Amino acid sequence: MVLFGGILSIKAVTFLIFCVFAIAGVGYLLGRITIKGVSLGTAGVFIVALLFGAFLYNPLAAQLSVKSTNPAATISYVTNALKIVETMGLILFVTSVGFIAGPSFFGDLKKNFKSYILLGILIIVFGGLTCAGCIVFDNKVFGRDLEEVSAMVVGLLSGSLTSTPAFSAAKATVRQSGAVDYEAIVAVGHGIAYLFGVVGVVLFVQLVPKFAKANMELERQKLSEANPETPSKLDGSEMELDPFGFCAFSIVAVLGMLIGCFKFGNFSLTTTGGCLILSLIFGHFQKIGKVSIMPQESTLKVFRELGLMLFLIGAGIAGGASFVKYFEWVYFIYGILMTLVPMIIGFIFAKYVLKLNLLNNLGSICGGMTSTPALGTLISTAGTEKVAGAYASTYPIALVAVVLVSQLLIIIFR
Image (cartoon, rainbow, N blue to C red; front, top):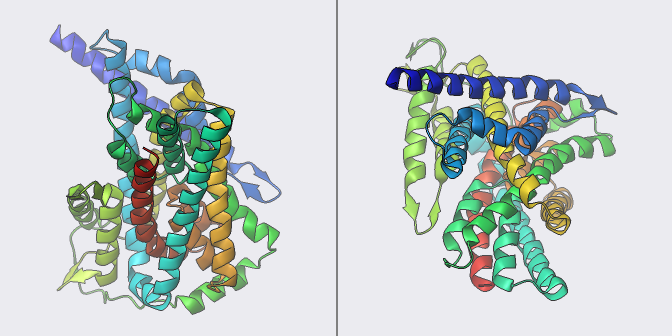
């Protein structure tokens, strides 16, 4: 009987892996479709994952239900499995980005430190103000309970900025009540806004250069002048831990996850922040004594794309299920506003006040919006990895700001 159950478990896991690769294959095909020079790219995987979650989430749960007849336990099992896929993808992606940006990160940060801080804070503040406006509007116009509306709309804010830390902080801050599950309300808002939060920024970083009729070769030259190539600290005599750099990559991922576990009140760097910061530091130094701690460039590019794909699939399937179940047009519109308003204001501020060049501007917008998928798209659009530096510089500022703003909004409207 135990053996039979084990075989069923293996089949269930195989079925989940089959679904992941099927979504990836169809998603990349969708992402290749180009209309007037604009395509979804890797975000096509996210769209297919959303559709899968919306229409096939329950059949997936049924297929994976090999040990429990309890529907709630079944859904929890599927959710946990998808969370593993999502988290693995996120670790691969952000660690790769950190290593890639590391060599030039600190030089770029030193030159544009004030600009990155201002832009990161500005984007989140305007996102928070838009969120507060939506809460007041909904309460006055529709008469919904202020505390419930604030939980929903702050959830929308975390979804519109695709920010898992803000989502976690909002859930931890809402008042616990036996009558109303405020944590569930936050989760619903996050799921509703997540779709446009991903697709909106992905399309923005492609459409802006089109509308501006930007010469990408010239923009890459401007980016190189602002962020000059940093000479490698490796001279070829260093000992490699393995031919591809898997060992160094794994060490950084483990240390990053450990750092991300530390909490300061309700705030923590999370796995994302921990892995990003550690990989930036390792990428900057590149070696310890005579030992290389820098993975091969080819390894980093593969891990970056693979990680983004897995992250979008894990998040997309779960988001699709929530989106269909709890969708309301008014909440979706709130989410659109909370994505567009801070992003557009941030872009205008960076262009006309901070005087950032186009690619530094868009890279910073991706970081300020804490948008992992948009960075992958921007790298493809820009044709250079250097845009990751602006993202990595602005992201930590926005990460801290969005957590604090989310908690503050919950407390104000409680």
